Amino acid sequence: RKEVEQDPGPFNVPEGATVAFNCTYSNSASQSFFWYRQDCRKEPKLLMSVYSSGNEDGRFTAQLNRASQYISLLIRDSKLSDSATYLCVVDDQTGANNLFFGTGTRLTVIP
Amino acid sequence: NAGVTQTPKFQVLKTGQSMTLQCAQDMNHEYMSWYRQDPGMGLRLIHYSVGAGITDQGEVPNGYNVSRSTTEDFPLRLLSAAPSQTSVYFCASSTGGGVTEAFFGQGTRLTVV
Image (cartoon, rainbow over all chains, first blue to last red; front, side):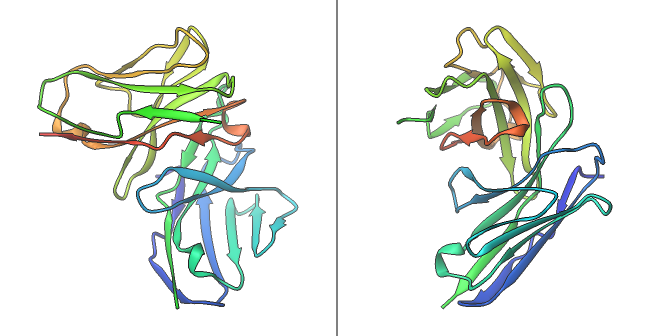
């Protein structure tokens, strides 16, 4: 079983649409959760951390459900510039706190 | 502000050749790591280091060596390249492993023929 599982997509949505990505993780002891964004042929970059209480950053909202081991990312009012792959990332709860990456969900926003 | 610098950006190797991928960071981060990214597999951890002089294996360490003689540098060495090592390699650094933001280098696209 993979440590982090995501629907690979692709998600093709029109500009202005709302789109949601989901992710599940297997280690119930994990404490740190993130969404990273990766543009085509570029390096991953942190989009936002995910907190138990949920958090919002502009058009982006991240939520965590510890009981279901489930993380979500909601993007409202999609822009063309949101087209990218979104990586769900979870710490492995070892002493070094390494990261497990999902395979990513690809989003294309269409004019 | 350079952040994490990886070299080279592209490399083609013949089977059996060895090479070193360079990684340097100027943020004084203690934690550094190497990942490989393959289609459909996500990023997988090869080796990591929690500080100078300390390294450890990740999920897929076979065929790779690392060293950490300084805080800034964390080179990845391919001992005898194999076609299965064709991949995109990313170096990353952070202040505290998985609890803080990881900063990635631009990646090295390696092809082994």
